[in-house]
Image (tube, rainbow, N blue to C red; front, side, top):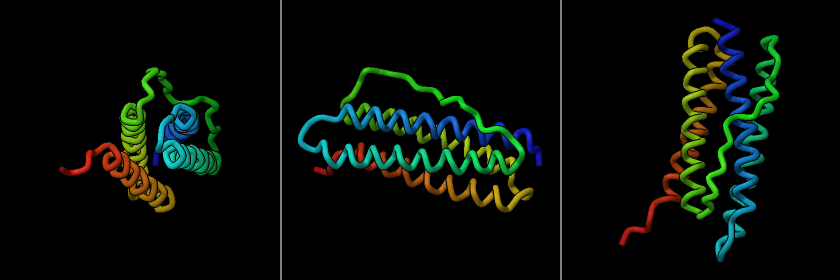
Length: 142
């Protein structure tokens, strides 16, 4: 296993999760309207989950002898805050993280069951998030 590449990829995952904390917290502050309360709750849960995921990625980095990054992944402010715009940005963020996790899986497959299973578990969670956001963006059938 190329430990250096694994640590680099884990740091990218860590940075993306930290960006998720900021992103979802920001989104939760920008929700208005009748459905505000459940949407804000969901977004804040996403922020908490991102923080938890960042901590796990950081633990894997230090286990491998690496140094967790202090960087935060890409954050762009579109100034578009309709629920659909927020969900579109969220979907893009989740899909990017899914690619990072698939890269980790390729690097660890057959090399470390521990890291391979971590990657698989996280891919499963991210795919579920993508599906959930896609459903949220769908209109009710007429």
